[in-house]
Length: 363
Ligand code: GDP
Image 1 (cartoon, rainbow, N blue to C red):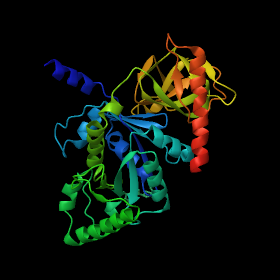
Image 2: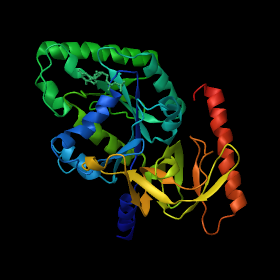
Image 3: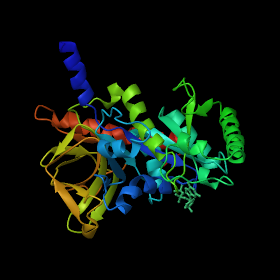
Image 4: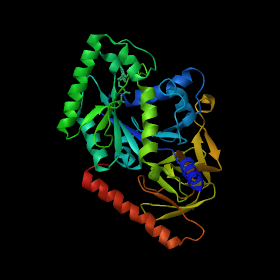
């Protein structure tokens, strides 16, 4: 019984997995995110989804609602999924390489009509180098000739409603994509047939326009994460946090946008950030996020928080951040921690960021 309770507690103490979306330009990364976010907004309820700093948070409740047709009462042990939504962002090229490091898992988007393209392969290699697990969203299935749309339906259900000709074209294109992955040294398979996850990559057909396959995508990500990444996702007290960007915001001065990967950040925390002119020691003045999506009227202003628990995207306002360096870690100095040690640790990060950029030609 004690063990059971312990197991339960561990279960309940998981943070949200962080997922990034990668792929060739125009494969539908932005549209896919819009689609996941959009349905509920159009129906007048954001379902708790919050658009954050460089990220969107999808709460478990929302995911349950979206996936109930696929699997009723799915067991969701994580609070939600945090999707890093950098496509189209000015520093996307930076975040793409750094971002994939923060990510627990990734969606690699492939346009079914176009197959693997140069940036697909580039993303693929980046993910492999960083050892990030990913699923392939084979997007734009609605463009197959004669496709019968079925809004937001699970993919197997919608596939059963297609004519023989459509299914034939689908299989032909799927096959081509599988061969292209094979050329990259990867076995791949439709996700619901894949029994060797980890060895063989999963392909999930979807449409960002009609929402088909989106329930599958959401459920897959959550279940995959909670099945294979429990250790990584177990919530810890030690803060793990990465600076994405340094920005001037009216009314708040210089701020840093961060992704809090694990732990808690609190107003008043003393932090060390890596700076171009040495370590920056400062105190968190405010922890800010945009207002929830259903409060459009307050766009452009930020909601303050006393504390924020991982995983979340947050804007931090504090003094002295002007020389902070994007891509490095933010550390919280604990009551028993040695300040000099903390500063030294903070600055070690800059070397690893630089080395990484030099070695891989990213950045
Ligand atoms: P990104 O560059 O990867 O972010 O691609 P976008 O999301 O901007 O999409 C590129 C174009 O493809 C846009 O015109 C989208 O409307 C279109 N598109 C994206 N997903 C789909 C899809 O599932 N079906 C169809 N028919 N068009 C799509």
